[in-house]
Length: 290
Image (cartoon, rainbow, N blue to C red; front, side, top):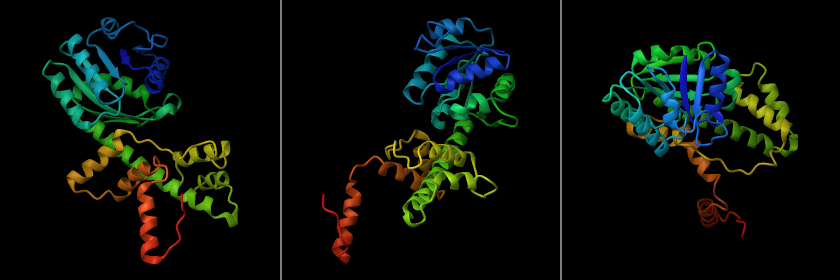
């Protein structure tokens, strides 16, 4: 199948490569002309056969909105637009409605796999019209590992499931972070964190791909001394908590993991200074002066 990919960064570029390796004619457009197959989005779309299939892998928000608007102006009835970026599911529902009014199909496909997707394959969660999913299924089968893709529901369902997926990821990362910090603080045992991570990956109930990555990280830098303790958050973690609040669903671990990331960005956190001051006031606990 021939398709066009918009956005050839770490994810989009690797997806183009994997599709080509799987026998598809995958072409792409990116503002970075060094990696782009075409000088413009319009030129790429013009080179596609009908029904045209265009997969967007650009950042969520304004850039995705702009891309969808541009595609709405150059595609025609029966064509298919796929958004594989980490878009807010409510935006995906809106995009589906706008494109549907023009007779253009829209699929929101939550895409997980990161930079390892080229080799291992991508986990794909597809929402939107079932007939559009059926048409592009050969593409999904090539991108995903065995049993690694599924149709999960109408417009918005793909990105909603990816949002929750990333919220769970936040919680898992935070659990590993707190556990290894406690091990690191147990100076009397002189733990080799690489050894423990490797050990826990052998039959332990906490084994996982994330723990395998921790094993690799501790092997490269045992004390993680080359890193600064700053952790960014993408939109999905925040959206997950907002949806939990609106729907009255308890998500205490996920909420804590999001707020913990905010703490990582503070130098000499004022909130932590308030706690230190209050502990000193009510209990005479010692404080460290700046």
